[in-house]
Length: 639
Image (cartoon, rainbow, N blue to C red; front, side, top):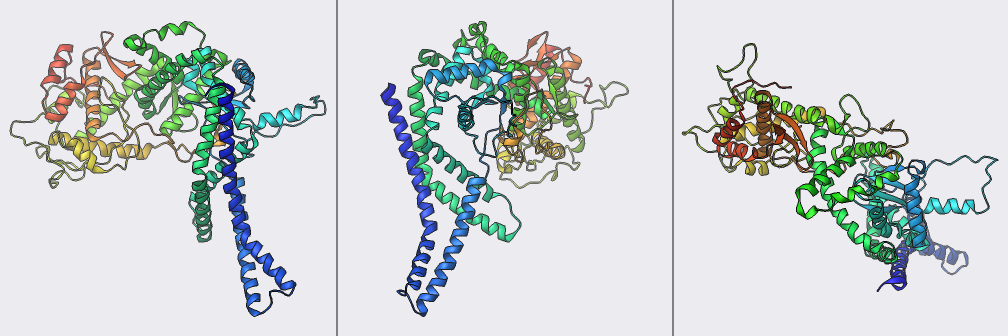
């Protein structure tokens, strides 16, 4: 079914489901009023002489007290549902004066679809677009002062109310930088078309009711120390969840009907172009995810946030189109006008969105500071890659010192403490008589706490500490870094290290514990509300969302002990290559930090490092270093 018939059927289904949601609300009100109705009947019966006697008097008092308690509880629940601030997506608001062409395009699209235009436009660091209702009083902008010389027409107040009630159009920032203007318009057509059904009073009321219940559940879930408050919140949460369960199926059907009506209405606008644009949506998502996990995450861990993430995703996708034959032709689109040209100051918007992405995905502070500063792509190799490798190499040698691993007697330059790659290789090399690492089921017999000195000749494998985030990104094809909570079960890490050597397992345990301690000391606050934005007129809408539980969307789970050890050994090899063979740090848009030798990226280091970690065989790694002229016995510069 297409055309007007499909639009009407979808809208009718949405309205039917909205009425079902409102009936749930009406039933809840009826249940709350039922004791009061019974009390009224008893009181009227007593006053008219029909329900008299001692038993009726007692019943009247009990029912009246019960009715009063139920009415008070219902009023409290209704007040919380109506006054609680619904959750909103963290975004960067785009003012109309900073993007007049974008607003003009969206309004023209709404006129073509014959639907109300969105009230505002906002950007989010995600590859998606949607409508978000922010008509709640606690989400609205401050009131605008009216002046006597304001000569608004008679219809202006109504238009203002309509604009205030219309939802906000949230656009994924990667779309603006990667897509062309026509493609963006085609992708936004079904989204903007959703403002039509959203303007219906029944659908709007049903959505407000559901969002209010969701906000009430959040209020009830907040920590309370007062016993009375805990009891009240428990009752509030029970009632709100009960009503949400009753509305769930109808709300799902209502949103499905709204989406159907919007999709049918949007078919008349750029339908052929939308099919092509959907391919760009998937490509942008892949490039954005790769950029965040491989490129941005190592910088965030070093206390730097890339200030041009959206420019970076264009570079990453252009590089993908160069490497992948399936992406051929995508780069030719770059000759057309990009959608970011619809912004007056795309650089300022990109910076604001990049800072918001760092807060959401990493939990970084709300504003820049000495330990949280922006970094440009031109500075990335030196400021992030080089510092990350040298920091990891220094940590590796500190843990070796803690484990009591002696430095080699010779081969060090005079006046230096001799942090060499040879020390790491000699320690991890398996002697012919050394047994393999014990399995996780074997009883521990080794170092105990990784932070206490032990005999390097006793290669026992303690249970590794919980995985912790490190200042190191994926490079040279090594397993990608992972991020998340550091209280992961130790069993998974033990299973991961079961196939490694005993000395490797012990070193991985020490590195994991050291990383956990460093992160505990340097964990960003993330709870503050920014007092300033990266640029004038652009910044995260901190007043609309709660930043106390950051990161809201952690990118990756914790790294395993094997991944941490592999990353640190790779970092040490890269430092030796830079200091003894003239290599240089580099940035690969798809794989993150990379090592450049004679201007070319080396991509075959990971198997050699894994051979050392898993089997204790340094042969492949030594052969690789010999080919490049790397001298492991020479000391390297650490942070």
